[in-house]
Length: 416
Ligand code: GAL
Image 1 (cartoon, helix red, strand yellow):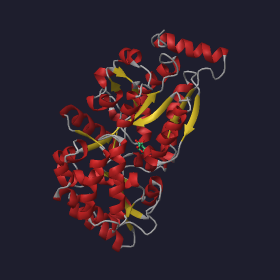
Image 2: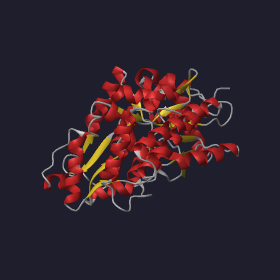
Image 3: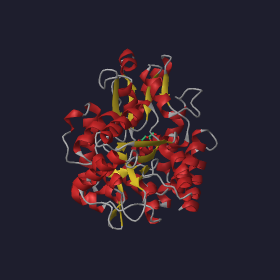
Image 4: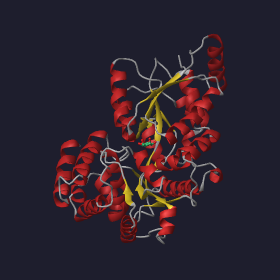
């Protein structure tokens, strides 16, 4: 029996279930949205569901980038007790779909016309063997710089257009007593910077060849060495306490005018907004110089874990709510990301969000969306983690750039 009877029936069932049995129609969601800005965005979803009498059982697992969350998920599924839905990225969705662990969302996808509005780059992960297995919540991108405008104004700095101008700006900030680059020394954060640095050094063809195709020549190239050299330059602008710092605490350094810049995905914007900061007045957003014409993206999706032999009414209602136009704007406005569907009016998003949405739509239309290596959209976790290890070892000074390139080729060859 299909668990999804279509929109009105599912909602009616959810309503009846709520009326007759408290908690019968809760959804348990495993996620890693635990920072201030992330929690504020999540509340938009919780409130949206509450409006449909769908309760929320929270299953937060702290740890940026979701590594810890995926470990907890594996334990939950292994014990035969999967959550209703799980925040998940890229190839992690594909891996779970291959295990047959995910529910069939084709009914709600068909009713919602998802195929027409969700771009192919997201469907690559949301659809497995012609079955929708997850619902895209948003689209983030990683090749962003977040800048404290007061520091830039004080030092007479304009938005850097080239890598050399960016380095000079960080140097000016450091010379003036500020932290040049706010950063948290964690592998996923080091790799997040590497996305934009590599894209900026070698461009999209290099990025595709090295991180998506795992071409050994690209991985072992002088271009890759230059990317590691640039990471070494950035290492010179972080503060002495960067190691292990959570990403949102690095964002707070820029928000509080202790640091001039942070290179981070646009979830960082959610922290600025949550702190009451205004883009263009308190902070600037710009693509990492060199990568201006590109988008290294990652989409947060909610994968629905099978609770029986068909998608449940609650899962279908959750999925339908997530891709509704009104929710897509309300959520992404707070989260710092852009909508996962390309047919919306973005005028309610702030200036950074409108720019990001236009760049996303243009890249999606022209086939120029490049999956973030750092956030699981270029290759499966084994390869991603192998890259993490080399990038972080180099950032921490264990390898010089030439050695890092050799280590990268070896590590990827073993992992793929
Ligand atoms: C990313 C995720 C974002 C944000 C970030 C920091 O992987 O897509 O939504 O959670 O990690 O944790």
